[in-house]
Image: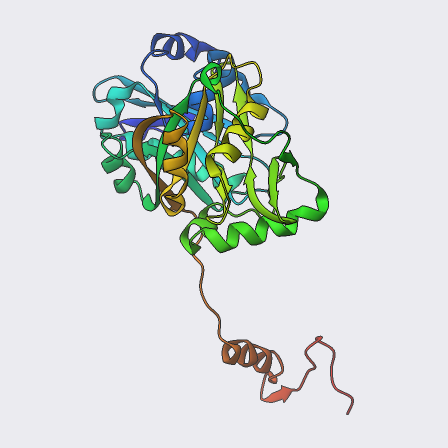
Length: 326
């Protein structure tokens, strides 16, 4: 967005913005748990991510001429997935800036240009960011609660190696489990179709009853497990999962438990997990779906077969465009 009478200018970050990004490095408002809890803000990644050939990251700078304030935001997108994720906005005080909406809109356009159909954001329900996101077109599609476990304190008996790497033949079973447990709103926002799955599965009596895919980084491990309510001894099963993900116990493990997976919370509390804030999961739709009835499709086909008027005489044509034999 260029300045025109204009008080707002939005552009990709470049090398001479490094001082701004460094200045606000301690004032980051995150909207992506996997980024915040595993890696955190990295000046190098925020700058060079937009130069990646895979084009999975875009960082933009917005400047308000009215108060000479800088705002920086980032959006991340994995190729072939349906949704992109809002990474962060800085500085935090920019949540009250009148130009924040313009920056969020630009990030949404950039994500859509890369193939995303939706833009997702995770935010504390008490955060000041909820209202600006609503004003920018985001709506809540689910709730979740964060739990933290210290890897070194994971003690107790549990079955060994009950979680195994996902095999190609189990992908259909995992998608079926997800469709059974997740509400339609969640499935529309976080579809497993097209997503590369590289997680762990838990089987009970030969049936897939759990799936977990973790995101690991120097700051910790984050995952959102999918667990069937009929899993027996859930606390032991979760303990086995956590030990397999954090065998050394040096990094904390964070779990995002969705509101529709409420049976997982008591098991985590039994393991000594520390409950964190409840979060609102928000989505901004960048495409508008429209139902097309069968009658509409038939009408369109009939219209293509109608005569084309050429002067005073109609010339009948076939649907492939060629003239009918006389």
